[in-house]
Image (cartoon, rainbow, N blue to C red; front, top):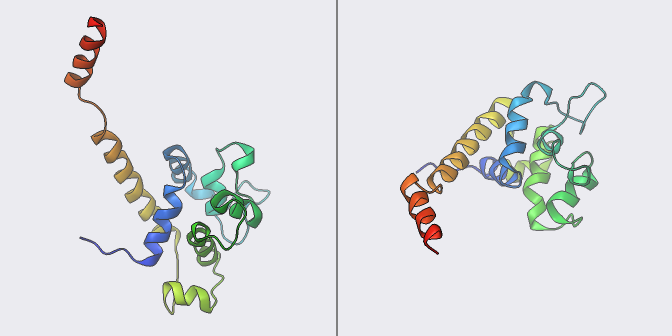
Length: 149
């Protein structure tokens, strides 16, 4: 069993907060990922912006306030907000003692690491969905039962 690092756990937590469609959107828009700003005039955006880009306007992440609203209903101190906050900080290369405490002395997050974790997460979710799909015989049995009622 592979032991996940805190960074991997935080990325997984962030990915779990979005639908597969949002994750596919991020993967398809890898070339638009940027650091340091939520979005720019050239259509590029940060990790959270791209993940939320296909959501309704009221759920999109384009500022710190909308990030906190999305993950924690506006409460910056909420534990559910912490993984997203730290992922934004390490991605934006805002390395402070708190980031080092969480991720180690020389924390770094590359786009390759993001997309490797994303691909792994998507594969796991797709496998879960496939495993939970009823078989053709189960569908036929259910259909037969419904027709008899």
